[in-house]
Amino acid sequence: SQQGEEDPQALSIQEGENATMNCSYKTSINNLQWYRQNSGRGLVHLILIRSNEREKHSGRLRVTLDTSKKSSSLLITASRAADTASYFCATVGAAGGGADGLTFGKGTHLIIQP
Amino acid sequence: EPEVTQTPSHQVTQMGQEVILRCVPISNHLYFYWYRQILGQKVEFLVSFYNNEISEKSEIFDDQFSVERPDGSNFTLKIRSTKLEDSAMYFCASRALAGRYNEQFFGPGTRLTVL
Image (tube, chains in turn red, orange):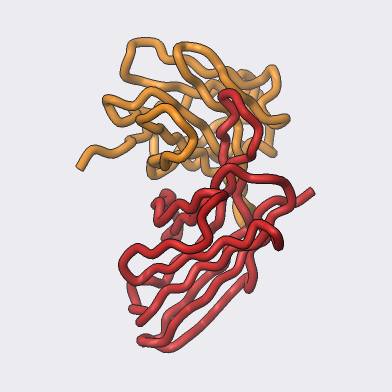
């Protein structure tokens, strides 16, 4: 099964607008994280939300988590050209022990038009 | 700001050759990971490593793969006999604290091209 599927696959908006990306997953999670990847570069951690949290903010980022729907959203407010990147959600499963490998989605490619 | 580093940034090899990808995790981190990303596809978990042993591995991490922390600073991924389908970006990551509510810090990646 696919874990962490984002939509849309691609999103193009004007600078200053808000960007919303969604992520769905299939299995029980311990936490969900969002990462950004600039073209050909490494992954930068943006925000982590625990399974018992519903909403979290960090600067211009707002993440929501609905465990009943197994979905999360990432909102970037007042977008800037520098926000152009691919955004991935990644989950850590609810299983115990040392299992904490991240399961990534396919990502949303966000383009901010100046 | 401390960061995870990886060398080389790009490795080209012939099919059947052995490659070693190197990573230097952040110095006080205790948990280490390898992921790969085939071009145009999602990032996939390969293996996690703690206390000098593998703590979790995916189905991708078969007998052709091995990891090692040879000297207390480097963390390596070895592919014994590379295949064309091993061509991908390989990311190393590390994490400081115990408990799973903590972020993993990723390196910039090594692009492996198998010819």
